[in-house]
Amino acid sequence: MLLAARPAHGYELKTELERHFGGLLPALNDGQVYTTLARLERDELVESHDAAGDARGKRIYALTASGRREALQWLRAPAPEAKLKDEFFLKLALSASTGMGDAMALIDAQRHATLQSLRDLDSHPRDGDDTVPALLREGVALHLQARLRWLDVCEERLEN
Amino acid sequence: MQAVLEGRALAKTYRSGDVDVLALRGVDIRVAPGECVAVVGRSGCGKSTLLHLLGGLDRSTAGEVYVEGRRVDGVSDAEWARLRRRRIGFVFQAFHLLDAMSALDNVALPARLAGQDRAGARARAGELLGELLGELGLENRVDATPAQLSEGEQQRVAIARALVNRPAVVLADEPTGNLDTDSARAVLELLTTQRGEDRGLLIVTHDPRVAAGADRVVRLRDGLVVGDTTLAATGTRQRSSSSSRAGDGSPVRIADLGRAAHPLAADTADDRGGDLCDGDVDRGVGGGWTRRRSVAANVRSDQRRARDRHRRSADALGAGERSA
Image 1 (spheres, rainbow over the protein chains, first blue to last red):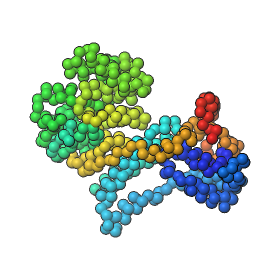
Image 2 (image 1 turned 180 degrees about the vertical axis):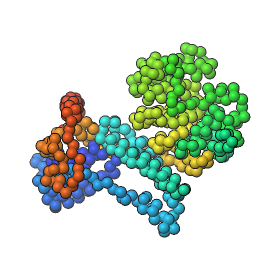
Image 3 (image 1 turned 90 degrees about the vertical axis):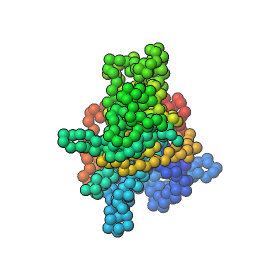
Image 4 (image 1 turned 45 degrees about the horizontal axis):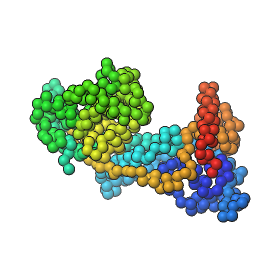
């Protein structure tokens, strides 16, 4: 996707990803970046050539025409809203029927984990509220808060 | 370690008409020096009652209260008042500042009530306000009255007032309840950073984000403690790995999201004003919103672009980070 802006070599792409996602992104290793680029090249979405005047043999990657189409299509399509893509949801639903877990204990444990995630998120050094990583973090925080509220609802319903 | 504040087997029964309402049914709670404890639970679970008993604003039906190791639940009202002035700071949801007084005098008031002279009290208040409002560039607004301050600023003044006599513990009742997200976060940061190594902090809240900021979260339900969980301190570890790679680029700014500076954006600009979902590449997606930009939105984005240009030229004069 980032190649749509301009051709770049692998390290530049990694840096750009970090500029966009800040600490939300798990640390990337160079291997992942290059494996992905190799796969995209195999699928003819990306093409590469040696950087001019670079003795170390850096390769510059660029989008192909079909890569651009693919990128545009991905960008314009609304992201699917995941409804059941939640492991805790599955655990809660299955704890009773399998007799293997106490739903209330699951809720307590999950609540602790979610509070901890929210705490970790808020203790990030702040990039400044006008940055994209800060905006994305706010989104994650709202998701976590919704989750905590939902855990309260689960607890209430289970009590009754 | 001796707790700065402790309640043992606290119970409170209210008489409501002909029935007794059990607001608290035997609650144990302690706040260690330097510790931040959040008390959470649904409305009516007894959390505000607990705070009132611990601060001597109300008397328990049974149980004991200790402030810095000293048992105080049986002391006189006058002694409670003295304790509240000197050892316990309060922060409320509705700020409770005195409208007729300046921010500075509001903060100085508890110091005056504790016996400090006017000059000393005002000096101490000024120092605290400088510290708490300084980062907002408000240190020169200490003469403003509460009505002239935003809600976030008023809560900062109220926090300064709670801290002016260097209390052993601060009790906060929904301190962010009246604040927007950003002010709430700033106020929470202030409360937690100002507690230092010795001062305890007890926050009653229904705001999960405030609870997540505490060291320990105590949950009440129907007047009983049903959960007590300690959260791990998180430093700046997530960042340390990437900061070693810093210098490669500063975070992307939100303003840059709106700018049409690269080929992809230029491409989508072709069908601006049209339906974003009518292009051939989008066939099959279906049902998208048609987003026609209003004149006002265009004006806004023009202004944004102008700001961007200005900022980019400022960047260019600076580090030239984008040349990489």
